[in-house]
Length: 297
Picture (tube, rainbow, N blue to C red):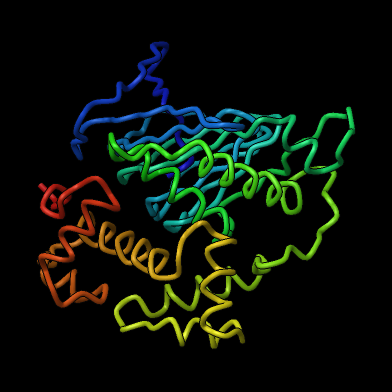
């Protein structure tokens, strides 16, 4: 999940997990990439009860689910239940995590704060802050982060500079309108969907991952034509509707593979796939693992 940074801390020793050509489920893995206007950090970590840190001024996504873990921000500790796809933001304070009993998959994005300030108020010189967010639903950020994550999972997955800068601008303006202090004035952006609608569509998808889903059904939920819906959804999240649905199916399958004894075939059926070979190909593309890699030992 987004929450853990690439630095693990055990006692007084800090250990940086190194990026390797192929990930192993039982080994920590981290990757840092720089894009126009932002830096991203991806982490896969085995269960760990040591304290880990998320640095200030970031927006991130948990791509793993957690029944309960300890979270501390601004000196206040609490226990959280974190669903896969939850979004976190840190402002001026770092966040601390502990008692993580499940595998962790996290992406953190650190935007250029000058870009964020210009999005809030062009020409302003005052600093802006990110309003902390704890395990919130934000399918717009989830979609954009999923594209960035894909570039970390595959050596040939680098985003083209134009694509990367477009994603950065979408993310920065979204942060300015929904997470920054002060907030930017919200504007109706032509060809985009409102955050509330995107979140409602994501919930609709999550409730039907085992069922066939059509573009017509999603467009009907948005009260738009199929053509205008498909364009607006991709303009908002960075993902075409079918890519978003597949991403969520693969996330559900990953949780089931790690936490249950269901067969790979059964899990494929549980997330809407009848062709096991097609499921395996997509699973590796979206997660970086073969389904068998995540089976409980």
